[in-house]
Every structure is written in C-alpha cells, then in structure tokens.
Image (cartoon, rainbow, N blue to C red; front, top):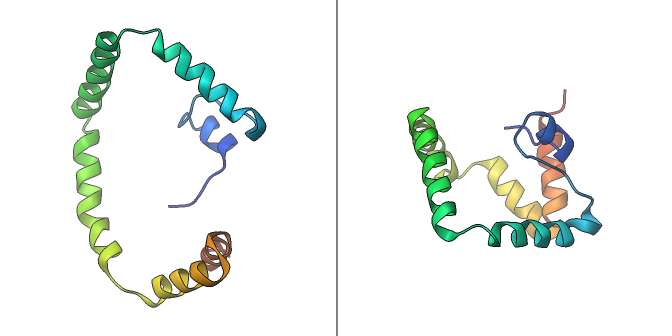
Length: 106
C-alpha cells in the first residue's frame, strides 16, 4: 500500500518508461500516433492475448479476491478516513496525502 515514485515503478517493471513532465504531452501524442498505425483488429487480438495470459496466471482471481477484502474498508467510516476527507476539503489533497504518509513514518 505504500506510494512509490516513477523511477521506483520503472525499476520494478510496473511501467516501461518515464518522461519529464514538460515533455509528457509530446511523448503521449507520439505513443498514440504509433498505436494508431496498428490495425484495430491486431490491437484487439493483442489485448485479448494479454488478458487471457493474465487470467491463466490467476491475476483476475487475485484482483477479485483482493476486492472482496478491500471493498468493505472503503465503505466503512473510520476516524482516519474522516480526518483525511476533512484535510482534503480544507487544505487540499496534497496536505491530506502528506498527513496520511506521516501516519506511517517510523
């Protein structure tokens, strides 16, 4: 549940690249143009293959099992949740995330 930055996500293989914020729009458009050159049928087949591979590896089952456990937590009202919402409303999301992160510091 810890938050990680982009370089850590790259190192873990969760993402395939990191671009500076000021070049994000350009990099995104370049990638979209590259994807647009692939036929919709080929993209659909590739997506199906990836999804079937994830299902065969048990990924969908793992996600659903996790949701069964986590979903009730989002529905529950806790003091920490109320404080997070209050800080978000009064000081912004950045302040609320900092407050949340401070709760887990050793």
